[in-house]
Length: 258
Image 1 (tube, helix red, strand yellow):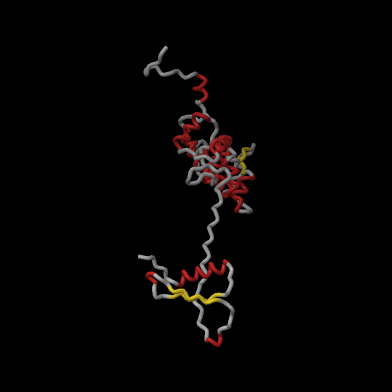
Image 2 (cartoon, rainbow, N blue to C red):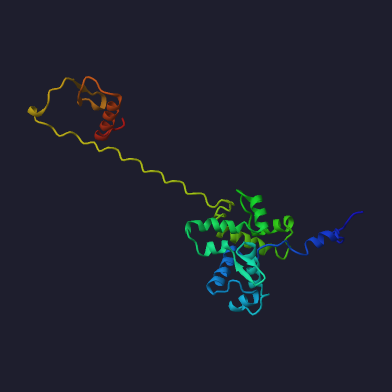
Protein backbone atom coordinates (compact mmCIF):
# COMPACT_ATOMS: atom_id res chain seq x y z
CA UNK A 1 0.00 0.00 0.00
CA UNK A 2 1.49 3.37 -1.03
CA UNK A 3 0.83 6.76 0.53
CA UNK A 4 0.26 9.84 -1.58
CA UNK A 5 0.76 13.45 -0.54
CA UNK A 6 -2.93 13.51 0.33
CA UNK A 7 -2.56 10.51 2.64
CA UNK A 8 -0.27 11.54 5.50
CA UNK A 9 1.40 8.73 7.36
CA UNK A 10 -0.66 7.97 10.48
CA UNK A 11 1.02 8.68 13.82
CA UNK A 12 0.54 5.95 16.40
CA UNK A 13 -1.61 7.08 19.32
CA UNK A 14 1.23 6.37 21.75
CA UNK A 15 3.48 8.96 20.03
CA UNK A 16 0.72 11.58 20.05
CA UNK A 17 0.15 11.02 23.73
CA UNK A 18 3.86 11.25 24.50
CA UNK A 19 4.05 14.76 23.07
CA UNK A 20 0.79 16.09 24.44
CA UNK A 21 2.58 17.03 27.65
CA UNK A 22 6.16 18.33 27.87
CA UNK A 23 8.89 16.93 30.02
CA UNK A 24 9.48 19.31 32.92
CA UNK A 25 11.79 22.15 31.93
CA UNK A 26 12.67 25.61 33.33
CA UNK A 27 10.48 28.15 31.58
CA UNK A 28 12.58 31.02 32.88
CA UNK A 29 16.34 31.52 32.92
CA UNK A 30 18.56 31.10 35.95
CA UNK A 31 19.06 34.87 36.14
CA UNK A 32 15.30 35.50 36.21
CA UNK A 33 14.83 32.83 38.86
CA UNK A 34 17.46 34.48 41.02
CA UNK A 35 15.68 37.83 40.63
CA UNK A 36 12.55 36.22 42.04
CA UNK A 37 14.55 34.87 44.98
CA UNK A 38 16.10 38.30 45.55
CA UNK A 39 12.61 39.83 45.72
CA UNK A 40 11.39 37.13 48.11
CA UNK A 41 14.42 37.69 50.33
CA UNK A 42 14.33 41.51 50.22
CA UNK A 43 10.59 41.77 50.92
CA UNK A 44 10.55 39.19 53.71
CA UNK A 45 8.37 36.75 51.77
CA UNK A 46 10.43 33.67 52.59
CA UNK A 47 8.14 30.83 53.69
CA UNK A 48 4.89 32.37 52.44
CA UNK A 49 2.41 30.71 50.10
CA UNK A 50 2.34 31.29 46.35
CA UNK A 51 -0.74 33.59 46.50
CA UNK A 52 0.88 35.68 49.24
CA UNK A 53 4.16 35.99 47.32
CA UNK A 54 2.34 36.82 44.07
CA UNK A 55 0.24 39.50 45.76
CA UNK A 56 3.28 41.10 47.44
CA UNK A 57 5.10 41.20 44.09
CA UNK A 58 2.18 42.82 42.28
CA UNK A 59 0.77 39.80 40.44
CA UNK A 60 -3.01 39.54 40.36
CA UNK A 61 -3.03 35.79 39.91
CA UNK A 62 -0.58 33.03 40.81
CA UNK A 63 -1.33 31.47 37.42
CA UNK A 64 0.12 34.45 35.59
CA UNK A 65 2.58 32.88 33.16
CA UNK A 66 5.59 34.95 34.24
CA UNK A 67 5.09 34.31 37.96
CA UNK A 68 4.22 30.62 37.73
CA UNK A 69 7.09 29.96 35.31
CA UNK A 70 9.58 31.80 37.56
CA UNK A 71 8.37 29.92 40.64
CA UNK A 72 8.66 26.56 38.86
CA UNK A 73 12.09 27.38 37.41
CA UNK A 74 13.41 28.52 40.80
CA UNK A 75 12.38 25.17 42.27
CA UNK A 76 14.05 23.25 39.43
CA UNK A 77 17.28 25.24 39.89
CA UNK A 78 17.29 24.26 43.55
CA UNK A 79 16.66 27.81 44.77
CA UNK A 80 13.21 27.29 46.35
CA UNK A 81 11.66 24.47 48.34
CA UNK A 82 7.92 23.89 48.60
CA UNK A 83 6.86 23.06 52.16
CA UNK A 84 3.47 22.67 53.83
CA UNK A 85 3.56 26.37 54.75
CA UNK A 86 4.85 27.79 51.47
CA UNK A 87 8.00 28.45 49.46
CA UNK A 88 11.34 28.69 51.27
CA UNK A 89 14.72 29.81 50.01
CA UNK A 90 17.20 26.92 49.91
CA UNK A 91 20.70 27.03 51.37
CA UNK A 92 22.03 27.29 47.79
CA UNK A 93 19.92 30.40 47.16
CA UNK A 94 21.10 31.94 50.43
CA UNK A 95 24.74 31.25 49.58
CA UNK A 96 24.31 33.00 46.23
CA UNK A 97 22.34 35.96 47.61
CA UNK A 98 24.59 36.44 50.65
CA UNK A 99 28.02 35.06 49.67
CA UNK A 100 30.75 34.78 52.29
CA UNK A 101 33.30 34.52 49.49
CA UNK A 102 32.19 36.33 46.29
CA UNK A 103 34.73 34.32 44.33
CA UNK A 104 32.59 31.23 44.97
CA UNK A 105 29.46 32.69 43.33
CA UNK A 106 30.30 31.53 39.75
CA UNK A 107 30.68 27.96 41.04
CA UNK A 108 27.35 28.23 42.86
CA UNK A 109 25.70 29.48 39.66
CA UNK A 110 27.00 26.40 37.83
CA UNK A 111 25.73 24.20 40.65
CA UNK A 112 22.25 25.68 40.28
CA UNK A 113 22.40 25.48 36.48
CA UNK A 114 22.79 21.71 36.45
CA UNK A 115 20.10 20.98 39.03
CA UNK A 116 17.29 20.46 36.45
CA UNK A 117 17.51 16.90 35.05
CA UNK A 118 16.96 18.27 31.54
CA UNK A 119 20.01 20.51 31.85
CA UNK A 120 22.08 17.64 33.22
CA UNK A 121 21.20 15.59 30.14
CA UNK A 122 22.08 18.48 27.83
CA UNK A 123 25.39 19.00 29.61
CA UNK A 124 26.33 15.34 29.10
CA UNK A 125 25.33 15.51 25.43
CA UNK A 126 26.95 18.86 24.61
CA UNK A 127 29.95 19.08 26.96
CA UNK A 128 32.96 20.62 25.17
CA UNK A 129 30.94 20.89 21.97
CA UNK A 130 29.45 23.81 20.10
CA UNK A 131 25.87 24.36 21.23
CA UNK A 132 23.51 24.81 18.26
CA UNK A 133 21.41 27.92 17.82
CA UNK A 134 18.00 28.25 19.40
CA UNK A 135 16.10 26.75 16.46
CA UNK A 136 18.21 23.59 16.21
CA UNK A 137 18.42 23.23 19.99
CA UNK A 138 14.63 23.48 20.16
CA UNK A 139 14.33 20.66 17.67
CA UNK A 140 16.75 18.54 19.72
CA UNK A 141 14.56 19.12 22.76
CA UNK A 142 11.50 18.15 20.74
CA UNK A 143 12.91 14.91 19.34
CA UNK A 144 15.10 13.71 22.20
CA UNK A 145 13.58 15.16 25.36
CA UNK A 146 9.82 15.11 24.72
CA UNK A 147 9.41 18.90 24.81
CA UNK A 148 6.27 19.89 22.91
CA UNK A 149 6.49 21.87 19.68
CA UNK A 150 4.81 24.85 21.34
CA UNK A 151 7.32 24.86 24.21
CA UNK A 152 10.58 23.91 22.50
CA UNK A 153 11.73 27.47 21.69
CA UNK A 154 11.02 28.76 25.19
CA UNK A 155 12.90 25.81 26.68
CA UNK A 156 15.86 26.32 24.32
CA UNK A 157 16.06 30.07 24.99
CA UNK A 158 15.96 29.51 28.77
CA UNK A 159 18.82 27.01 28.56
CA UNK A 160 21.02 29.25 26.40
CA UNK A 161 20.42 32.31 28.61
CA UNK A 162 21.06 30.31 31.77
CA UNK A 163 24.26 28.77 30.41
CA UNK A 164 25.60 32.19 29.43
CA UNK A 165 24.67 33.64 32.82
CA UNK A 166 26.44 30.78 34.62
CA UNK A 167 29.56 31.32 32.51
CA UNK A 168 29.63 27.92 30.83
CA UNK A 169 28.71 29.18 27.36
CA UNK A 170 31.00 31.78 25.83
CA UNK A 171 30.97 33.70 22.55
CA UNK A 172 32.39 30.65 20.76
CA UNK A 173 29.20 28.69 21.73
CA UNK A 174 31.32 25.89 23.27
CA UNK A 175 29.74 24.43 26.40
CA UNK A 176 32.39 24.26 29.12
CA UNK A 177 30.69 22.71 32.13
CA UNK A 178 33.57 23.73 34.41
CA UNK A 179 33.22 27.39 33.56
CA UNK A 180 35.40 29.64 31.42
CA UNK A 181 38.98 28.57 30.93
CA UNK A 182 41.53 30.82 32.62
CA UNK A 183 43.11 33.34 30.31
CA UNK A 184 46.60 32.32 29.20
CA UNK A 185 49.36 34.32 30.87
CA UNK A 186 50.55 37.29 28.91
CA UNK A 187 53.95 36.70 27.33
CA UNK A 188 56.72 38.62 28.99
CA UNK A 189 58.18 41.43 26.97
CA UNK A 190 61.61 40.54 25.61
CA UNK A 191 64.43 42.05 27.56
CA UNK A 192 65.96 45.10 25.94
CA UNK A 193 69.43 44.49 24.52
CA UNK A 194 72.20 45.89 26.68
CA UNK A 195 73.21 49.40 25.80
CA UNK A 196 76.65 49.35 24.29
CA UNK A 197 78.62 52.55 24.21
CA UNK A 198 82.05 53.09 22.73
CA UNK A 199 84.67 53.30 25.47
CA UNK A 200 85.90 56.71 26.51
CA UNK A 201 89.43 57.16 25.21
CA UNK A 202 91.95 57.10 28.00
CA UNK A 203 95.14 59.05 28.12
CA UNK A 204 98.30 57.09 27.36
CA UNK A 205 99.45 57.26 30.97
CA UNK A 206 96.13 55.76 32.17
CA UNK A 207 96.14 52.86 29.78
CA UNK A 208 97.25 49.69 31.53
CA UNK A 209 99.73 47.65 29.65
CA UNK A 210 98.16 44.26 29.06
CA UNK A 211 99.39 41.41 26.94
CA UNK A 212 97.36 40.93 23.80
CA UNK A 213 97.26 41.29 20.06
CA UNK A 214 96.68 44.16 17.69
CA UNK A 215 95.03 43.59 14.37
CA UNK A 216 95.17 46.13 11.54
CA UNK A 217 92.98 44.81 8.74
CA UNK A 218 93.04 46.76 5.46
CA UNK A 219 89.75 46.37 3.62
CA UNK A 220 89.26 45.78 -0.08
CA UNK A 221 86.67 46.14 -2.79
CA UNK A 222 84.21 49.01 -2.21
CA UNK A 223 85.83 49.53 1.23
CA UNK A 224 89.35 49.85 -0.13
CA UNK A 225 91.26 52.49 1.76
CA UNK A 226 89.56 51.69 5.06
CA UNK A 227 91.16 49.77 7.90
CA UNK A 228 89.72 47.90 10.87
CA UNK A 229 91.94 48.08 13.94
CA UNK A 230 91.29 45.70 16.81
CA UNK A 231 93.05 45.30 20.13
CA UNK A 232 92.19 42.06 21.88
CA UNK A 233 93.50 39.80 24.61
CA UNK A 234 95.27 36.69 23.55
CA UNK A 235 92.21 34.58 24.40
CA UNK A 236 88.48 35.19 24.94
CA UNK A 237 85.41 33.00 25.43
CA UNK A 238 82.86 32.28 22.74
CA UNK A 239 80.36 34.43 24.64
CA UNK A 240 82.73 37.41 24.56
CA UNK A 241 83.25 36.91 20.83
CA UNK A 242 79.48 36.91 20.28
CA UNK A 243 79.17 40.10 22.32
CA UNK A 244 81.94 41.69 20.23
CA UNK A 245 80.10 40.82 17.01
CA UNK A 246 76.85 42.25 18.42
CA UNK A 247 78.61 45.44 19.42
CA UNK A 248 80.21 45.71 15.98
CA UNK A 249 76.83 45.37 14.27
CA UNK A 250 75.29 47.99 16.55
CA UNK A 251 78.09 50.55 16.13
CA UNK A 252 79.07 50.04 12.50
CA UNK A 253 76.64 50.66 9.66
CA UNK A 254 76.60 47.58 7.42
CA UNK A 255 75.76 48.30 3.77
CA UNK A 256 74.87 45.74 1.16
CA UNK A 257 77.12 45.64 -1.87
CA UNK A 258 75.48 47.30 -4.87
